[in-house]
Image (tube, rainbow, N blue to C red):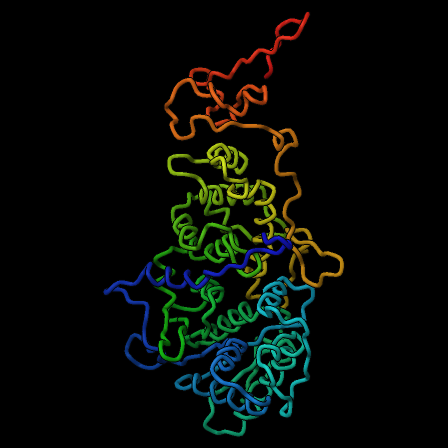
Length: 483
């Protein structure tokens, strides 16, 4: 964790997308196609629905152009959505819910606000000025107002255009369409557009549409992989920027991973570092993914079960701890408990290395697993219109006084007994593990009038250590051995 108590941000999420592409990308089994509407097996064009992350398009547009007011921005937004909608029979634009409080996403939003100290909120309408785009989007209240403004702008503009595609917008305030229909998916209490997009995609697939999901977000890709059986074999993600936009077919990735791994992958993502759970320092997504693919059935079952129920079971905690230990265990040394792993690695530390080089304690990992369980529970309810979530204060989070965002719990148990924290250990023979007669010279244990222990590099081995039974003789007393 960071010094102020926040989690380390995960900065390599995008690598997961490329790893999944590489997993199945061959000349005989392509998963990448040009971004075009779907066709059936007999070559005929099928009915297609495009599900769009509404705020992702906002960020995409503001990254390439400046706007003086919301009227100009709204017109450009409608034009861009219409360009993405070409060739589709139906388009659904989905927006986040920015009214939830407290929110697990607040730390991520605060980090993205960067050094912005004064956050001003706006009621968005045509005349609202956009002086600085980063500051304009810094407030949740402004973004909430913007989602409603853009949703209404899309519907009102396309309703007057007879050539427009059938369009639906979904925000926390309302679900609107520019055509007559009975929307099966109504207003949802879900916070994230990521999960709400999957809900709409599955509903569209059940109505007979081939579904494409427009998002560059790793979370959405992994959520979609979980739902391939409901989305259909022609379902795809539309990814990349305008120059490199392409379609990623989901079925080949699902088949390569297998049903259990494909479904568990989103939970693996929560465990190894997403926006709300934080990065495992020193272990990138590539290492974590290789370990996931090599996981035993028991460990895979534990990761698969993350998010089931209000709290993780003992089996889930145990299996996830084994997985995390595997990330840090040296070759040919298989530690399955955090305390044993830390003990082993502690003895390997060089004289100038501190305990910050060690993996987290068992207590810290338990809290991390609980936070992963919380996020997995949210993702697991992606098909529920009004989900019910567990209490985050029971799953690795705490509410500090005068702090709006939730803060992670580091651990509920001490890292080690006080006696261990005060131990002296020597580093004798560190450069030559085969040498005999260790600890005979400038041994730090000997200088402190202590015998060596298993904590030392000599491991307190009677055959090699010469400081195992150091006698202290006092006047008129028997010989005592310090142990």
